[in-house]
Length: 377
Image (cartoon, rainbow, N blue to C red; front, side, top):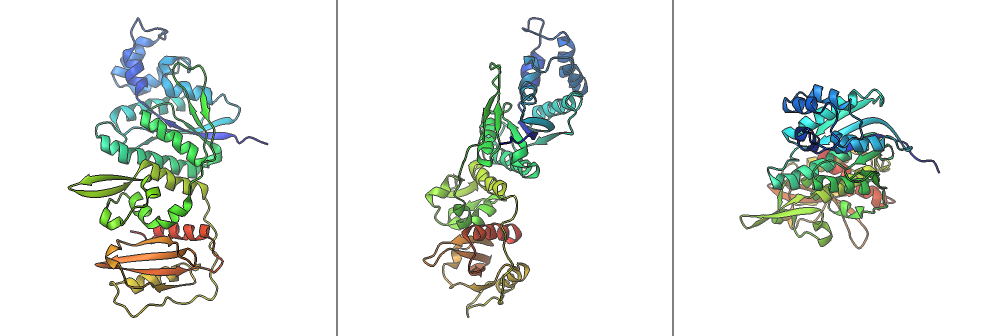
């Protein structure tokens, strides 16, 4: 069995290179490099080109070079790695940006590596001044950014270095690797070798995504919904959400684990599930009810723009107050799963979307995800 060669490395980044290492250099520092005074002075002066140039004169496995350089030096020697591209994931702080700048300049100047690209990606809200933003938005943004790179370069050609950064950042990066099928490397400063976590057969129940596709799509966009808007939250869905009580009202947001769930679906379905063009298409039908303004036009638009939809028809007019926004979900019924759309303007209405009779549950789930991306609000 041939082993996949990995060429792209996502690297979480801390700030210890500057704050913990270079700014603390003194004449009593153990194993200090010969150019330690120049390094510390350049760091204090924020002369990042000079810092990078001086680091090039120090062996890359020397502790003073920091966790990121040390770990990458070990990773690039592996037989299953042909390092061509590094993406540094830095915190949304001045120290994070500064560290990313030094690392970028350093690795661009490493002629022995001959890298094709070195990139620094700032993770919005990943900072330690506002703990709630860090937990709820920073970590989710980290997952989203990592998911984008994994889809762009391919999970079979990418690895994660989860050595630097906040402890929670490292933990989430490791979870992303496990969930999205990407190997994760870690090196403690006291260890002489790497610890690697190979991908594990993590299995998510994507039927849950189909059943709540509309809600998850809305929350992923950063929307905060009240308990009245979401309706009852099933126990197995709660692990994907974060709830907070504000003025006696429960508000829900997507949690970092929920973001991993959504990104894992995208990573495991990089190509759209085939939705064959429908045969014998029929225009949508509507009951003789009172509908929100624009409802019929919207249903007809969805049917017209997606050739794999056979037809659509309105659903009985009940519980319309519980409908919020536009969304698409899979609804279990005694006859089998059904793809249901919702529409809201002042009040709400529902409609069923009919696919080919032999459509699988996987195709229904993909249809729900696709429609939420195109029309959801």
